[in-house]
Length: 149
Image (tube, rainbow, N blue to C red):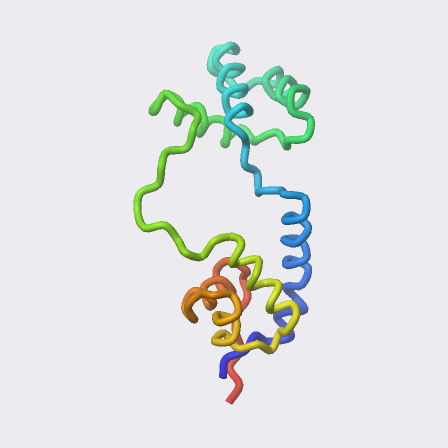
């Protein structure tokens, strides 16, 4: 039977708690809105194509709740705008993942309630295959199961 090591759960508890807080506050990791992208592109082009201190300050004044992106992120945004003529993300090709963010969060909640739960039982509770449950733990939540013999 495969189980998640309780020691790993204790060390990862802080990370999981942070993910719960992020879920409560609806915070997504440094994702800017289309409005914020557009503002940045307009300001950079008005300043001769340079990400100046003025652009930085105006962005901070316009969007006080948003962390100001770093210079490299803005340069990538400008490059994308030059290549595509848009600040919107392109549609992704390929098969969509069945492992949604909700299922990952459900997995973390189930494992918090019962850290010794097997991957098979977790997959049944969350409604995904054993492989997807394993992926949710290992790749998305950075946890590794522990085999008991």
